[in-house]
Length: 174
Image (cartoon, rainbow, N blue to C red):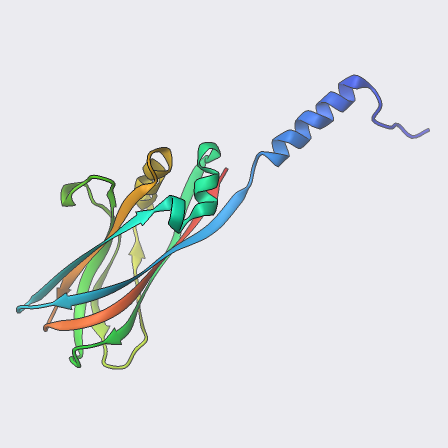
């Protein structure tokens, strides 16, 4: 004789188990920015600040913010898309997250690169070594108004002007 789920206790346990399964999930998302960098002087320095609003830049993550249990920064892609100055040089720098309303003193390092080529021929990918704690700024943004900034800064051996794409790959668990 086969047993079917008929008792109220079994139905209640089944419904509870299904509701727990239905309340969890993961959302992979990206945040992208195109930036224009101009360095001057010798050695040349640069800094670019790009504001992010999770409600518009990552609406799926923003939708699940009240149920979020964790967020992971999976990768950062940095690609030079155009060398506008015609100078090939090298650069060292970093990408940081800045909390909404914060200053440079509040920046949290996301990743850095050292002596990376800025060639005449593009596109050129920059290898970014990630810092695990960087997602804390995004976690705080999810708990708050959803705003933070991406800061790209560094120095080049020679003055240069280039365009670059920055892509953050994230995973939200809720």
